[in-house]
Length: 178
Image (cartoon, rainbow, N blue to C red; front, top):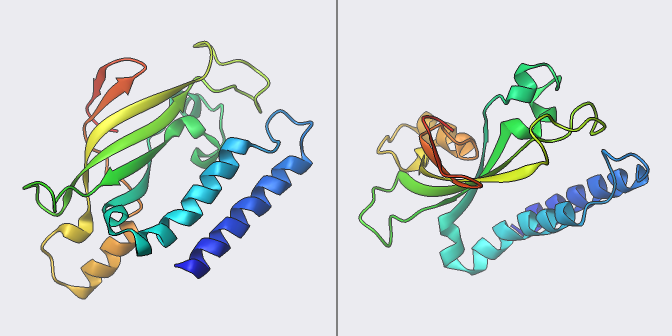
């Protein structure tokens, strides 16, 4: 865990320093928030080795094409941050009667980002954060014993399967899939 954490931290800092070299470009620049995220993301696997309660926490990514992507404002989904939702999934099986494959997730995304390399304001107003609550499925908890399944489930554990979600911020709204 230490080796992975240190390599992850080094890669994150290298990317932030590269962004800092482009400080005059509003699309780039050193981001303290990104740096904190790099440190926390690199530290979590190490902390999970020493704090058993943290083993219940995992992070996932889901991608749902945004209006900006569908309108052609972004060339790829990787460039469209509005299409990305980052999820913290909590395994409640040991403290509730939920099955081991059913978790609770909190997701965070963003909307109304700037268009055309951050030079043109989005039509919907200022950018804002969106927060979701949703059930989550951990494929590793399904009672399938095949070795290929365990391998596939371990690889796919970082990808969130689209499920219904409740948007809790900035407005209350139910989504059929997120």
